[in-house]
Length: 197
Image (cartoon, rainbow, N blue to C red; front, side, top):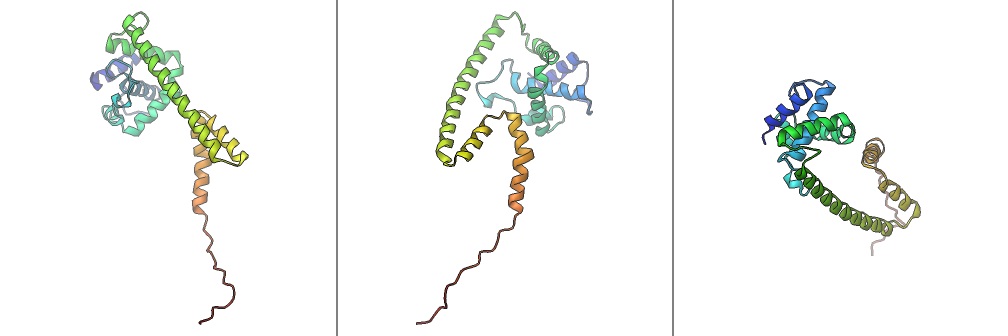
C-alpha cells in the first residue's frame, strides 16, 4: 500500500483535500484519520502484536508535508476525540473497505482478524495488570510514610489525560520552581581554635 493511495481514498471519502495547507477543522480531522489508517492499518491488518510493524511518524507525515510531531498530535486527536464519534468511525470503515476490500460487517476474514486482535489485547492487558500489581507492591515498599503512599496510589488511579494535565499544570511548574531556588551556602562550623603541635 502506498501513502498516495491512502491520501486519495481519505480525501475522496471526506470530499476534501487533506494535503491542503490549511487549519480548517475538517481538514485537520481528515489528516487525523489518514494518520490513524497509516499507523494502524498500513498492510490491511490492524497491527497490534508488535510496535515494530507500525509505520514511522516521519514517513506518514512526509507524504503530506507534515513533521512527526504533527502526526503524533493528530493520532492523539483521533484516539481522544474522533474515535468516539459514529460519523468518523463510519468514514474510517468506508476508507478501509475501499483500501483493503474489507466488508466490515459481513466478512468472515475480517471477523477472524477482529478475534485475533482481541486475543492480543487480552494477553497485553493481563501482562499490564501483572506489571501494574508489581509496581504497586514496589510503591508500598518504597514509601514508609502513609501520606506519601496514599498520594502515589491517587496518582496511579488517574487516566492518561488527567496525568498529562497534572504534569503540565502542576508537576512541571513545580520542578522548574525547585530548579530556580538558590542553594544556600553551607557554612562550616568550627569549634575552638586550631593549635599547631
